[in-house]
Length: 512
Image 1 (tube, helix red, strand yellow):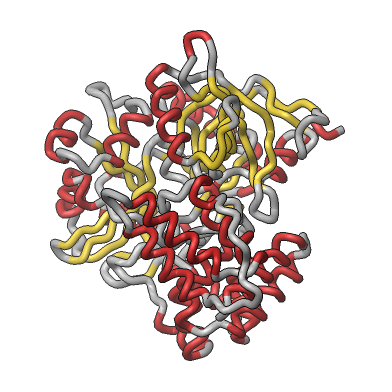
Image 2 (cartoon, rainbow, N blue to C red):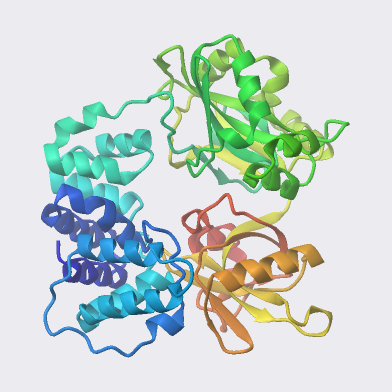
């Protein structure tokens, strides 16, 4: 496939807000794509490089190179060239990357150059790799959309499903099954403003503690145990105590969903940063395990002894979980009926907060496990307003913060995958956080005018705030009141950040 075809579709997808038009555009593109193009086409549509960061800054990209008169580059050719760029390291690598990028830009037409620069800098953010891409793939191959969604869920990504569909057609979907050792995307929760609202919506439900830990999916097949994060990264080697705990369970073959969390001597949660730091650390794992041990706490079972449990109601999945996992390793919960169970559920929330956890998740008893989706059957309740936003830029500090990136520019997701700025904050940051974010954001920088450093929208930060107020200064027409940083969420991707629509729906008074 020629790069110009992909660049043109990317531009059209960004220019339209109509979901049906986006689906049609992607369907046409998938019909034209060869199976071998898919591993490049899909990440490029979403604005991601399969190679990750390439170490290319604006000095390399801003070479003012005349574009080619006719399109000749293919997506696979571009992928190979960028892989070579990423492999350039050591003495003279900067000059070599500049030369290689210059050759690539010289081979591209002006339109292709603009697309490539946006792709490399992270400015191509279409959101096209979400449900719209799945619907487009289904339309292109005449496969049932529900079957394609399930295959993507079980594969953990769109690319392998797309390759199989384009090569073999709808019958290829049958090969995608829940398999021990192959992680699936986790089921996620929507937000409710109160326990009463959540219980009232769901009826008969379970109210579970919401732990301030790291989501983990545990796969065991005999003595082989693998651990995966919510982004499907393999972290087995980092958490030997969790591997040991999984081997102590009586089952020989299972997939469990839960969290790992660091607890103090009294059984209360240590800070999220400690848990996240432990899970993220690859160095001296034995010492880290002694100093910051983590405990697994399970709340769902996806497969046990070869039986796929995904389509079973939650009440049956939990019963299977309880037969396998002893109570100390299961999340605390309370069964509630609507409306008589609301007072007990509210007391359970208060007790959960007193135990140091961040809230509760209310789950409908009859709901299946909707992997990879933020279903209405799970509703999380927290006592304060929080949002997961993306850092768009940061301002250099002054006074005691001189030399540090301090004031963050915060963005929420738009329907087209771009980000709308909601405001700024410099509050809630410790000296350690200031030093860390300065280093991290400089690594993501795309420009620095001496006052504001604009960054690639890749870093997610959890923000607490007191409410919204109308503002003509920001594109969504609102801004956050008294925003402050709670923590950085490196376990989340920008695609998981909160949306402008979710924010406005939660605060209808701000738009009146």
